Length: 480
Image (cartoon, rainbow, N blue to C red):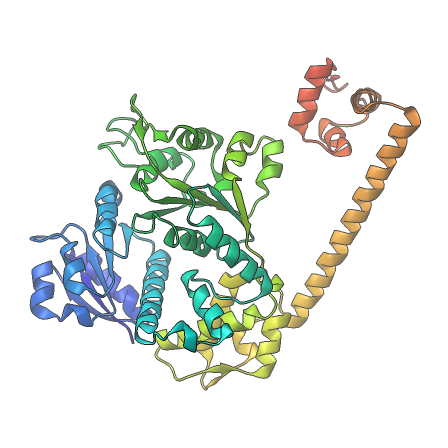
């Protein structure tokens, strides 16, 4: 069982964090200050130290030197974000803002402990490259990426990451939810010349639209109601390092315009400020949405899209990664059973086949949750399909239905396109003539939505073309 030391002077926060960690199978010790931690504990014996930044007496950053080589996670308030970033430059493994989300804290703790165990293994088991087989060398070479999987699709991705990481080019990571886009972003940062500087991760979908500009770019005191003090934005906090914007497709258009200025001019202006300041950040963005399609319909700035799309990395879905699912599942199984202090476990052959056959619509995130469930419920050493809670037959049926629906949609689209092309060719019209002819002929019987759908364009595009060609909308007979 992993042993964690909490150094926090607020008893309520310390107690709440202790209960959270103990409920998740961690052994926990406490201290209210750096001095108390020194007097009561052998600090390097812990697997992880979680320390508040502001403590009575010495600051929490003092724990970094005392704990070496053990990792130290710094807790801080949003108002002290710049200090948190400075603490990472002093050697803290990461920071987390208070009040913290429980799931975020648990994920961060699990990741740090797993990464540190991996580093210990690398240092104690080091051997000469000449003594390794080719397969061993490939496995160790991929350890710098921090992503599990040896399929052809992933090997191609690893190669691109290594080529792109040393540059300062903007990167757009595309892939379904749960595929591990943040892991790719972290690999790009760790393999770059900015590795010693902070990587700031922001989930654009998780911040309310009314706060997104303040969170990203900061604000001055009095900039709006409730702004009682100035705040450093996350872009500014990433100065010298990497800014990772997850789900960037959810970013409001106003914030997109500000972000474009960062990329074009290398400067930001806090909300409520009249002065700009220079920043040096590398932007890595991720999305599961079609940004190019959104840019065509006005849902995403086209100029920002092309700024982001300097380098595009596509992260394949778990179902497209051959037998990676079994490799990933076995590693996750070992992590979970160690965390819960259970005996060694393995998958039955039937369970392995189920892992391969199931489509995993939630990708690696769904797989991880499924295995955690299995480890909790397992009473022996064998993990079965039933313990994982996946229905292979239902998944295959849904997959077949999805394939049928996709084929039907493609056929309908092809027929509609053929009909349009036939009508266009028969009348010998240009595309512009065809648009005007179609709208004038059908606008009395069809709504604007139906017209746009038939023409294969958005309502906004239909309106813009009406303006360009001088075709006014006809009022409905029911319109007063």
